[in-house]
Structure formats: C-alpha cells, structure tokens
Picture 1 (cartoon, rainbow, N blue to C red):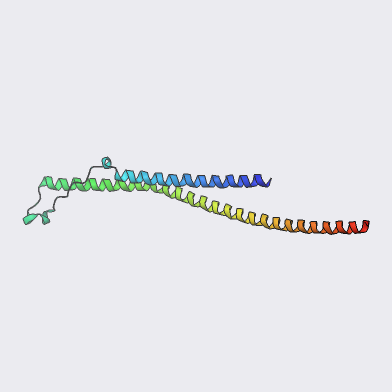
Picture 2 (cartoon, helix red, strand yellow):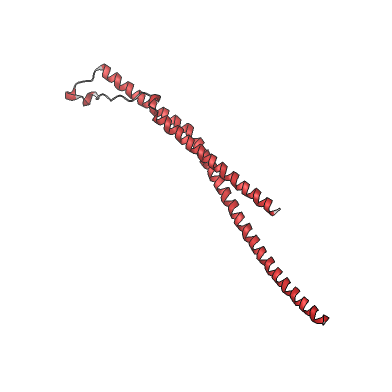
Length: 154
C-alpha cells in the first residue's frame, strides 16, 4: 500500500509540474502574441515625418494647408497606433497575469508536496531505524534464550 501511495504522490507531483509547464507556456504564448502584434508592420501605417510648425518654419514662413493636414493625419495615425498598442496590451495583460498567478500557485503546491514527501521520508526512515533496533534487540534476546535453553538441556 505504501508503494501505491508513493506512486500516486509522485503522479500528483508530476501533474502539478505539468500544469505549471502549461501555465508557463501560456504566459510565453501571450507574451509572444503581444510582442508580434506590436511589431507587426502591416498592422498600422508607418508614421510620416512631421512637418514643422508655422512658428518653427524657416524664416517664419507659415506652413502650407496641405502640410498642416499631413501633420494632423500623421498625429492621428500615431494616436490610433498608440491606442491599438494599448488595447492589445490591455487584452493580453489579464491572460498573462492569470497564467503567472496559476504558475505561482502550482509552484507553491509543488513545494508543499515536496516538503510533505521529505517529512514522510524522514518519518519512515525514523520508523525503519526504530524497527531495525527492535529487531536487533529481539535477535539478541532470542540468542540469549537459545543459549539458556541449551544450558538447561544439558
């Protein structure tokens, strides 16, 4: 029965370690998704260079209306890109946090089970030592009784 308990305990530890590995894999996958989404060049148009503001234009000349509209369009694209990046991060964050929390819980459970295993082994080692001492003592007493019995038979 003890070997079955140890086997089920080992299986339980293995299941905990496998679940922790799956949680870590989910964290890596979520991180990869977020990283790929942020680095995907087709996801949004590249920002165009900003046109100088009228007060910074050479010679103080005002910018053209098309230059101002290009600046506004570039600023809007940059704002949309930042909003999209933020939404991707916000969507990924709960999944990453959940996976990290699950991984932490699995690690704690694994450590607790390992501590219990160590305590159980120490207790069984102590019991085994006590039984060995009792067996040696019993053998010694049996030998003494045999010797005394032999002496009485003579």
